Image 1 (cartoon, rainbow, N blue to C red):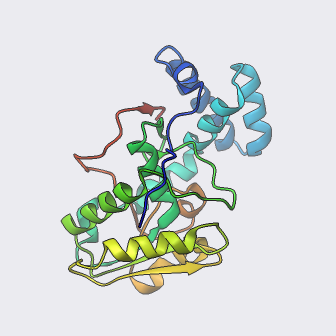
Image 2: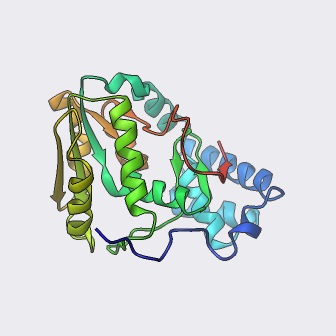
Length: 239
């Protein structure tokens, strides 16, 4: 499939907003927001309070929001996290857009964030619209390399059907996954989240960095954990 020429790279001001001298401020903001969430403060109100306290612009507030979580959320996520080699011989359900967009950003030089739960997250916002970019093919290939190195018994990769170009992305993944040593199915569904959350019913492990899914699913894995060839050179650690 022909690749597009646009890139999922950094925002025009990211070099300034996530410069080394900004990182300690952002880390403190994550700490403050997590403290408030632990004590039951509503997310939006707490984020507004912290954002105003540290004079953060909107993109920095998005970063802080994605990296923070309450102590209770952190404990539950870590309790159910499994290492990468735990997927060997087990069913694996993948949050397709969530992971592929992160890989596209890594390959395109975008800033990636390491959250309090040590998951890597991007700053892209998928709001019903997705465009194939120059890094899409390489992102798919990289994901498949990880799976070949840690082969599950089967893979089910979910894509949001209502999102634009999800059908084209499904076709591209299927074209590149023809020689896998395990069965892999790409499913277009209305909403992957409930299916990813119900993974224990089928003995599967979930691969995602989506906070809402991580708070409710069974065993989950960070597919980028321990990946020595992870392509990003710009990871901002706010953990």
